[in-house]
Length: 120
Image 1 (cartoon, rainbow, N blue to C red):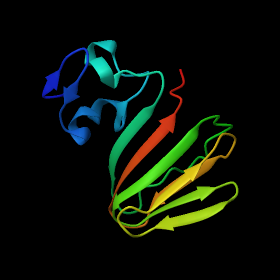
Image 2 (image 1 turned 90 degrees about the vertical axis):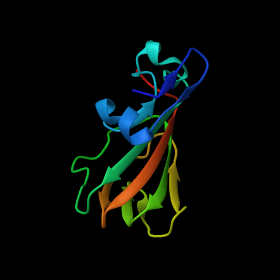
Image 3 (image 1 turned 120 degrees about the vertical axis):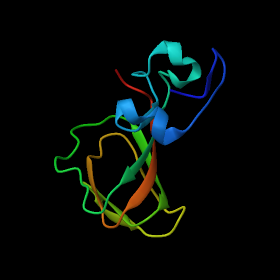
């Protein structure tokens, strides 16, 4: 868990603190005892994907806005309306409600994902 946790602030390591929730660091599914990391407004994920890691099944009727930001590596996101490969640090893909997606790590990759709102 985070190095420091209080009701109104937290610090720690994203990879470590998200390890029990598949990389998700912030969201409705974080126990309220984790303070500000528990949120109904937004979800944040930090994940190290080894080369070849992929989401085989597509999402279905997701009604949120999503932003995927490449920290390092080569990462492809496939959308019902197209495909995008991120190769440069800071490249991103963003889509709105109703667009399904899948993804694949072309090389070892680190990505940050932000979704809103956080849904139960």
